[in-house]
Image (cartoon, rainbow, N blue to C red; front, side, top):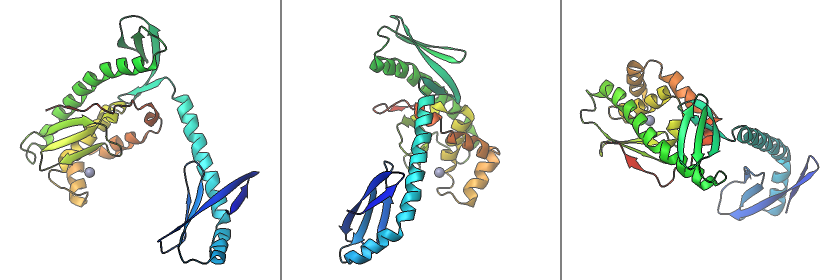
Length: 249
Ligand SMILES: [Zn+2]
């Protein structure tokens, strides 16, 4: 197994022989190095190819480790922080039999009877958050929908659920829009932008020039609203909402 020395550490490169055309070099998020090579590639040729990539591997090891440190730092900072509508709140858990949530200034206070029971914290938070989210997304949709009344004559069904890679999806034939649970962590103006974006798809299915012309006409500041969805700090406070799906219309 080929080895690369870097910063006093040894990195082993795992070689996979596969039905591929070219030699491909990979580095995973956990700094695992691998190479896939065609079945008929001669050993010596492969060794030389790996040798010529040593510097590339070193640079990428540094890059991956830098990214990991950044991630850990953000995670550490975001402990006990909950982002709600674009604002960060400190989560305070208080021993109290009422099992409910209160918002006071910059704190979200969770009153729970077993202070250290994380499962219970999660449950109380969700029990509070789901109807709140329901109300907020419904109101946002009601504000935005009239802008699109002429090209979406029938009010679509709105479903809120866990979406892994998207903020929203529109199903034109089903007359339905799915929105991500994670939106609730972001500012209301960004949520409105996602709703409008999905509604504009009823007129223009693809992201062509016409799509953005219409979006810009209906919401001239959509770019600023969209940019706020990129806050990396927020992504670490996502509540695991799997298993929760509900409909607004
Ligand atoms: Zn789109």
